[in-house]
Structures are given as structure tokens and as C-alpha cells.
Length: 294
Image (cartoon, rainbow, N blue to C red; front, top):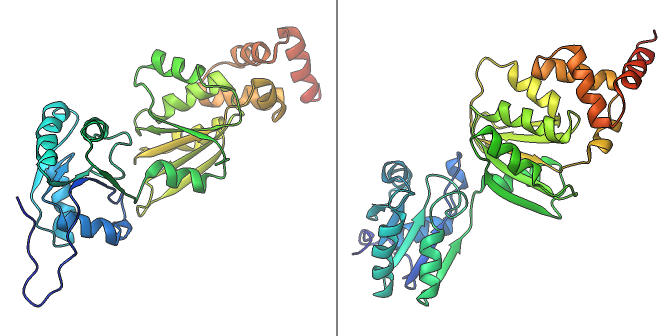
């Protein structure tokens, strides 16, 4: 094993200590690759990649010839054992995911825990991370936040996961796929109310980077109006009690938002708003009529 040697007359990087290197890679903009990360990738004996083809594009761009090996969800167990044996013999191995920080919603954790158990040094090489980038630019509180990775794909499991969130002021951060984002926003509205503030960070660091901020019903409407919803997304929100969320909108506004986002009748929307506010249907109807000046 060995990394490519620099041509004569060109200074070589100082040697790396043996160990496991977790190297963050760009999530879109190649300029986010750090100088330290490049030095490590040039200097290690081998790079374990989530997808060797994807990583090879990055290596080719920066002229790095270090050998690669696949290390992904479907071979994580046996490949971790193989890499661990090499590490125990003094190898220097880097782990990268297709984009972002390895171990965060990507392979890496199993090898890290095994290396630590064997007394092998683990070196985190910081860099791009969609969750962290999203929360610092979201406008939501960064004092206390929880990263949950991806929500379950099935509606029932997804709603259960959302219902289990503590209703406090902590910010919750999720990754979500574009083909599921509308369903997820509908679940958030159903559980926390249509006025629940949310933030969606889309296409982080890429050309079409975008932040959508506002009540969940409005963000849902913005995305639903698009012919196609594309791009990897980060969903963020701080759960509020439905009573608090309701105060931000009148009954009429909540009814209209439900009719728009869920396609239900005014009668059904009014029933739901009344139930969420803990009031009778007749009382809710009278308040709706008063708000309309009737």
C-alpha cells in the first residue's frame, strides 16, 4: 500500500501518523474541500468510499491518485473488519462519503467504534455538513438542537416519529428526500398545526441553494405549486404547542390553509381547527362568521 509520490523537485506533504481519518468532502461546491482534507487524501494508504466512482471524480479534480476501496451500507460489516486489520498493522486509512461528513447519515460509525475499541487513533477532518450549514443559516435557535437524520419513509412511522418529539424550544433537524417532502410537511401540519414555523434548506452550497421559511402551510403551498420539486433538503423546526401556533392565525386563516394544502372542504377544515383549539364546532363556526363580518 502507498500513496502517489510527488514528482522530483516538488515538496511532499509531511508523513501522516497511522490511524483512521474521517474526511469531510464537499456537498456541492468543490471550493469547500479543505486544504487539510486534500493533504490527508493525498497521504493516506487507502481511501474507503461510499461510492468509488463518485469519489474518483473528486480525486481526479484535485489530481489525487490514492487507491480507493468501497465502503457502503451493504458491505459495511465485512469491509470494516478488513480495514480494521490494516489499521492494526499501522495503515493510514481515510473514510469519505459521497458528500459531507462520514458517519452523519452515512457509513463510518461501525468502523470508528471498532477502531476505538482496538486503541487506534481516529482523526476527524472537518468540512462541509448539510445539517450544520442549514441550522446556522435557518434563523432558528442554535442553542439546543437535535439531528435526526432521515424520517421514516412510511407515513405511519413518520407521524409516530414526529409525535414523539418533545414539545420544547429545541430545534429539530431532518434530512428529507424531494419526493417525500410534501407528505412530510402535511404530517408536520397535522401534528403541530398549520401555523408551525418551518425552514427548508434546499440544494445546500450548490448553484440553486434556497431557503424557504414560514408557516408549514405556506412552505407546503410554495413547493406544491412547483411542477417538480428537486434537490436534497434539510427540514428544520422548533415544535410549538398547538395552542401557541393557533394564536398566530385566525380561525379563518387556519381553515383556508387546510383547504389549500390538503384539499378538504371548509366543513372538514373547520372541524379540525375546532378540535385542535379545544372548542365546539358551533363556537368555531360563530367565530368564523364574526371574522367574516356576518
